[in-house]
Image (cartoon, rainbow over all chains, first blue to last red; front, side):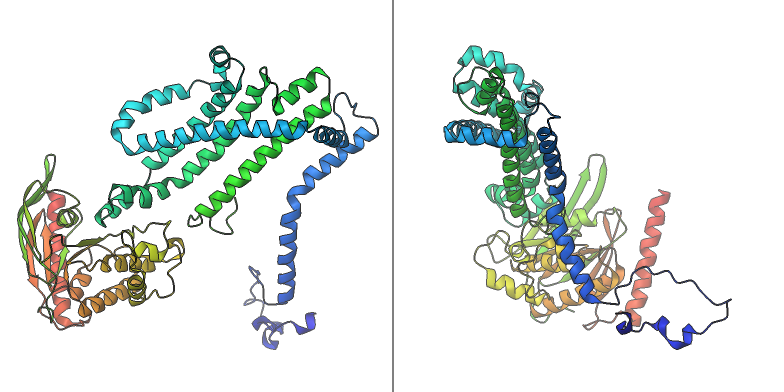
Length: 303
Length: 246
């Protein structure tokens, strides 16, 4: 390989001669990509593969260890059942149709609650962000309500609505409302006034300004709020479903606790994790698509 | 010197004054700008150049006086370029040019080509250099065929080479299609190379009104322009010294 190295100026016979030590300078190679292009390509390919594999090494390794210690009996099944037991539980529940039913019920609750809360947050955020009248009227009150931990309302909700669907869905809605509201409102208020001035002087009306300047300018914080709200929505559902429910993932957990089925409890945790991860990746995909103009989201930018 | 075929609109300012609270920024400015004239407003920072421009643009109301644009159109188009490009980062180059317009893509493409950005239609502003962004801004202003073009130090933030090429571009575009232009600048040379008339502002008043009667294209090395530049710079520096003393 070294025989075909391209000749660098420093390889020239003149400089390879022993030179006067007073003029000899030390060479520090800061960058050198003069040789062998194929090597670079294959490194790049290898880094691409590495990037795909790297995030999985730790979780897969941990699960393997967990399975191993369960198999040799160091982890009692009553405390922490083996991954294979959790899988088997999932299989059994799925065969009876309970798994699908409970997951769908929970998904439905999150979807309705989140949609209601996020939509309300968006509308309020736009109203307060755009109009100083609405800001004066509403912002202080909303900020005060926001400081109440919404889970503290659980007993009140049960008193008001009983143990039906309403309290759960309403709790999820309340949890998702404020992150969306805060981010929408402050996102709109922080849109560059110079761009708004420009839009106005280029003949955009109020509607045009909102669609072409304000909304895209506030989109990044709005999406951040939505992502955060999704997380809160799932969290709220976990709590909401532990109170006197007859279905849903939370019910599955409660039921399993009474029957000492740790494998089902673990399964529920895994289900929550998958749901949260799915919701987050969907919103991140939307983010990447809608914000491709944004320097932070431009292709190649690490997120 | 006036442009070969004068177009654009006549602008007149009568006693235009502006005060922010106690501080008076403009003292009853009177100014007549004939159609098609290229005016450069120079002066130290804070003498009211940009305020005057913003009042003419209708972005700020004057405290006193009257601004009239004599136009054949009912609602004449006034377009302004700023020192910052003010491009919408979420719009492609093409969509920035067609901001507020519908179905004028071909025109926009032609203008982009005229400012040297052919084929960059679908790029986002993030990937453009400062000079390229100002070119988009220029195309965005020109697609409206403005009767009055207001330039608030549009090349101020650019490096010397880019600035010179932008000046040439602007001069070329205006030679093809003359308009009434009001340019605010810190750069005396820029004013002398581009303008038909240079107004030196001092403490909210027009202190000098100078007609530049040289053939175009002008050369920076022109001895007469160099002498004028010296003179104007002296005026600017003494004004600043007076301001500092006062």
